[in-house]
Amino acid sequence: MMKFNASGSLLLFVGVCVVVTDSFVIPTKTWSTKLSLSASEQGEVAEIEDDSEIQWDLFTKHHAKGGDEATSWKGIWTSYDYIGDVVDETVASVNYAPKQGGIEQTHTIVVGAKKSDCETCFDSMETKTFPVATFTPEQMHKSRLGSVALVNGPSLLRSGSMATELVLSQGDGRVRVVFQHAPVWEQGVEPGSCPPQALKLFRTMVSREALRDTPPTFESEEQNPPEPGNPTFFRGVSPFKWHKVWGGTSWTWGPSTGNRGWAIAEMDEADSWHGRPTGDTMNVWTLRLPGGILIQAPRVVQDGEAGLCRLAWMPDEDTLLRVEASVLALEPMMDIEDETLVGFFPPALGSLRCDALKKLGELEEVAASVNTEQDTMGPLDESVAAAQNSDGDDDGDNSGLDAVRDALSM
Image 1 (cartoon, rainbow, N blue to C red):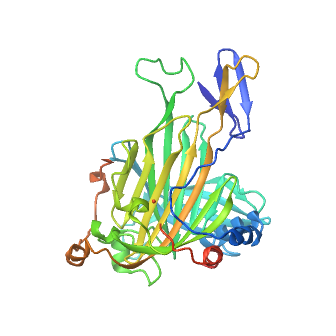
Image 2 (image 1 turned 45 degrees about the vertical axis):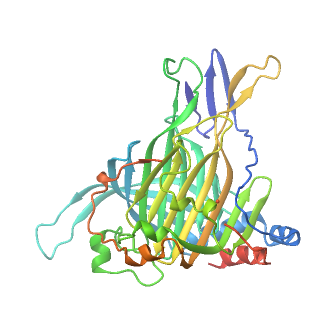
Image 3 (image 1 turned 90 degrees about the vertical axis):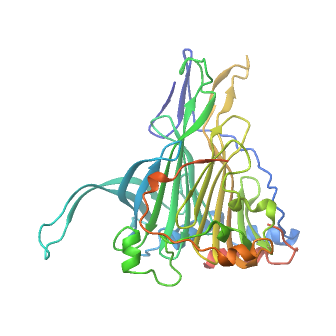
């Protein structure tokens, strides 16, 4: 059985032994992507700014972007179960407001609504606001940013599950995904009779959020089309649209390498996981949603394996944003004297990568099909979406440092 204290530390009960720990171990993940950064630039990137300043700059530019005013990302939080069915929808907002030299994050959830019975009256909504965290340049909690992406977690929840949040931002909109994995045991093993043997995905929340008067919907975007530079969430995106020649910049972070910027002259096929919606292994849970959204997560997270959580988004026809976070969990904590398991280290973020790509052209083998394929999209009940079973090349130019600077200036 696992329990958690107020600070989020893991309390694992093994027999009569109780262990409380705030420590963690983060192995280094090796990227298979072919990218280029010269040795001299590697030193320069680390000297651009202090890491906390970089994180705060990205946070206030792409997420808490209201300056002295509050920022409210309104959206519809749609939750999916393991087979991809919609199990819940909530109208809510993620709010960031300046507070005592920092930024306070709260969530406002609509818990009830009253519809007016006259044309000149307004509908009223009953809401509740919950505090989440207060951020400062020195305290970003478990959030890590890179370019236009934000990763929060993995974090332990009071329920005993693990949550990993991915966010991509563009213009006045963003897409936010939360994966939740719960402790599981092998078949035939009584749950709770021994420490968890793995973490299995059981729920995924997806939210299309915007800095608009109301949460984005098909009807609202039809009545008030977003301005150029802002995403249109509810539009037709043919599967062929993913298969293009993409190039741009990539931001990577690792516990031993820190922040690095890369130039991608042209994304190669091996790195184009966004074009393989069913994933690369049988352990990939995936869901492709209207409006150019693809999400992937490990079905099961085990000790010794880095689970890859991914989000790809096409906010417009010529832009592709991707974020990938490797999750490490169930790292055993052994007793030094008798080498017995006494607990687990808290889950940790092993690496982060964010790609900001632009369409450079058509792929020869699909060019003819791409030019003739066109999807249309109307109001869609996403309950029909179902989970399906299912690395960029660079020529070595001197633009790795520019990639970081470009991301900071976006």
